[in-house]
Amino acid sequence: MKLLKATPLLTLASLMFLVIGCDTTNTNTDGPKSVSVNMQIQTNTASKMKAVSLDSLTEIKFLVEELELESVNDDSADFEVEDLVVNMPLNGQEIELTTREIPVGLYEEFEMEIKNDDDGTSTSDPDFFDGDEEYSIVVKGFYNGEEFMFRSNKDFEIEMDLNPPLEISETTNSAVINISIDPTLWFLDDQGNALNPNDPGNWEQIEENIENSFEAEGEEDDDDDDDYDD
Image (cartoon, rainbow, N blue to C red):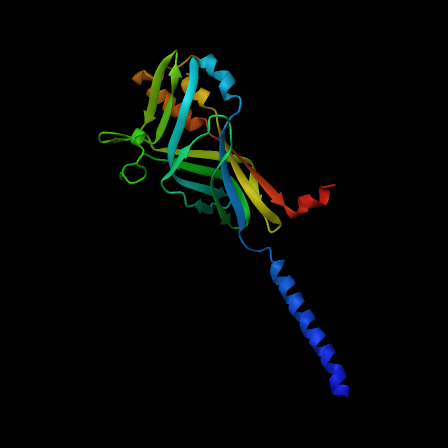
């Protein structure tokens, strides 16, 4: 009789052990954290087009070869985005370029490599080719009523400081890198004068403007933030 009474207690203890074991596994926060990379055109771009004689932009697209986060310890986290064709929404809508998991750390710089299709396998879009010439960026629109298609064959290595740095900790649920661009800055010289994209003499300056126009900031979603929610 004593054995029969003890059996349910042993079974209950075993179940409690299994439940506790499962909870311990689920609360492990030491692993990598999910980080998304989003991009958008600044929403005030349309209102500034007239100031640089841009009647409208009809298309902005480029080829992304690599995305990378640099930590304060010179470690890096690579995002696998080889041969990514980015076609930017012109209404300011945000798009997601990629999502991946990265190690816990403090990240202070984000890098983007935009490269031309030198091996002919990145895209079948004919706008990125002209005979033997391959392009990395294509911008279409109207300037002073005249249609244009600006194309660059330059390889861009764009470095963006994260200020403040993006902190990925054990309490981080997820994080986002937000990249923004203002294309109206591409068609202005250092004195604020308009650059005609149809004039080859302006192309080098426009390429420099493109490289300098990218901005990035990081946002973290931490468990600790929930303590302040009402």
